Image: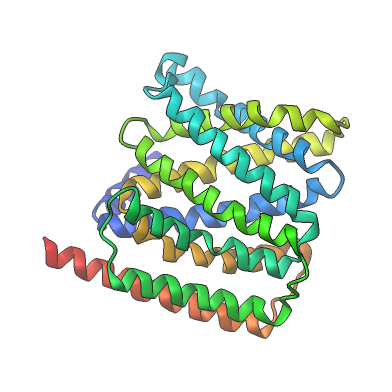
Length: 302
């Protein structure tokens, strides 16, 4: 397996940086889809803020084997303020998101959630100074159009204040991801993932204790699984952000809708509708198109 891993790593490094970033994003989206399925099951029987706290606490536990093998000194961050600043922003976004979650329909939730890549692309231009090409905007807008195809038939628009809260969480998450990009210039990926869990667990603790109930053994195992999946997904996402421009990878995040639909079918027996299939095709086509464009651009620069 180690030999196969080395061969795979060598082949991956031959790919353009943009492709590597997009692949990391795609795989992280698959992992996060399974994570969301686990958290959805757990939050049905436990307080949502307790679920948030335990998910990130178990993220710390999931990182312990690496901490012990490499030594705690290897995980001392170079920018401790940046780690906690990022953790505070992400925690605030999670609190707003979880507060609105019970009052917003799944269709509205999906549509609002996929505005995130648009906010990230805007932030990458304004705050990181990335050059935004027209084809990246086109791919993102076409991908978002695919999401609209899926959710538009089910939109109710009756969430009122909670819909606005859910929308407010999107730019907060975008800021969190942009801070990750700045941290990748100083920190190793594993350090960022560990301190994300530490910061968010600490900031989430007060709300998590308000309506605390003792989880069952099954639920503890579920939280342990969520910690492993969450740390793995954030590791892959951070590698994707590190590999290339943040704006170049955002169109591939719309593929998360496809993975979420597949996981919903496998785990919850939710049968995808015709509009879901049509939207998935639109998203897939936009992702393939921008991947080919990025490769062509990279070759022309070289």
